[in-house]
Length: 302
Image: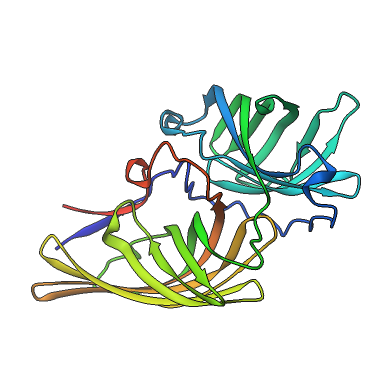
């Protein structure tokens, strides 16, 4: 039994390099009525050009979200483009356009994002770099909803990735993964949360989880065992601690034990990982693609 890790660029739901977004400002008490831009938006982006990587072929611009709120005389919040989450720093110019900037990181820069209200919700222009890609496009419309209470509930579908900070293994010649996909679907009743955590593009690495959500902090655990090509995969989420902010982002760490048991052979690994760009998709968000169609890092047998 041999396996190797192949690292691929994740587009759409989980682009696997870290964005490292900071905690955004909190919305003012005035709510969404203070600004025509406030609320949760899912823009429809037409890609005019995408350069810098063959991965442009797989770029799905429909996985884009903006969460905006009035903040003094400006607009604050968060955004999620090409699997990267970022702070929103916005102001309305003399023409009535919302001009959005963000802090540039080693892996993401927002070179232009201009929005204006329209009968289709929002229109505008966008240019960003999600290394190594540079994307230029225009926004033709945007679906709109209220800002979710993401500090009082963790319910919903969260997507993103993680970076392995420490890896302990036996039977492997190297750590199988340096990054892991995260897709976390939760329901919540009171302070009790339960659901499924998926760490691959199929259900091979699906773990039923349960735990508690208190004061914006989520604690989870879970375990799963299933057959795969004659072997047995055992997974145990030893620890999961994360926090949600006011604009649909989740940060934190987790520890995952993984064993692949074959005839006369056992491969074991423990991942200590940090969450990256984990973002809540709006509950009314209609996906045009699924994780089954997205390239992600995975184990390949030979």
